[in-house]
Image (tube, rainbow, N blue to C red):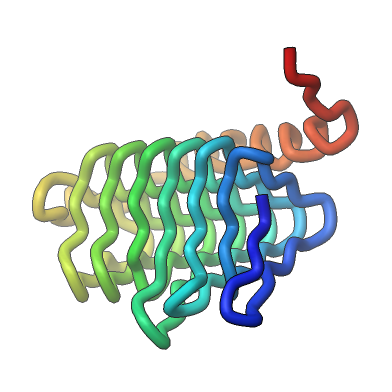
Length: 173
């Protein structure tokens, strides 16, 4: 469901699916070919959220920007089920694992993977092309080609699912 707040309205790109049970509030821009899953909350009430093309915001993800700040999510990002995102920036092709937390003004680099349940601390920066995990998150290794191939296929699943939901729709029972 899309909500206007304080004169600000969400913008949803072409061929993007937003679940009826998602809450997209205020200053939120969603790119083309995105998937915004059931129960996701995108709060652009204090600040603004921009989500790049081909990004999947899976079920139960919460994204919020601090007052007068921007939360910039890149292109073809995967945000796993139940992740909490207060980051300043998530780079293109990044993966945020299920249940991970990206605290206020943190950053995740391009092609990086934040493992399931990891906690990226306030203002912490995860560099490009690494896998990070733990609490607090630390770099474990460089991103491998097999990681990129696996997650590229996974991202396409959600782009395809968004199109299928838009074409076929869902019927409550």
